[in-house]
Length: 141
Image 1 (cartoon, rainbow, N blue to C red):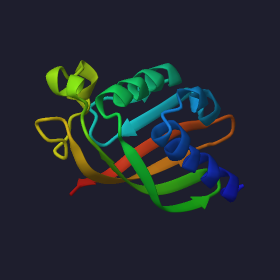
Image 2: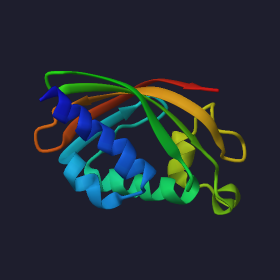
Image 3: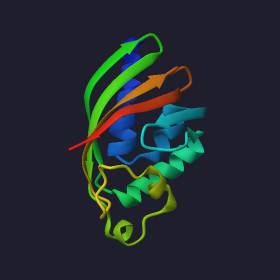
Image 4: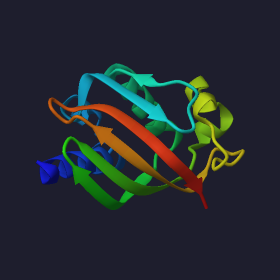
């Protein structure tokens, strides 16, 4: 099961983020999905909220790409270390949506560019899609 869970976690980065494929959100996450992100003041509740955030990121950082650096799995948990880079779109530089302001963190330049960030995701309970996720240890270069 650990290999299957690692593959499911990897799809989050390869398909949802890198290929900008929002159609896989329902396959990868349970309806009652909840995420806690180190740089966000509030949890992300439900896959509809996740879809809206993903759509916003596709507009704001259209070239955002993730690299899975390492994965460890045990039981129903997968820990994935990753890095990401992206450049803000011209539209984002003119008008950043409210969601970006709430998710703003020290690694994002005043223009909205994300030179490089690294973090660790901890995915929990893959039965029927990931139910919980915690993003921690966010750093920027």
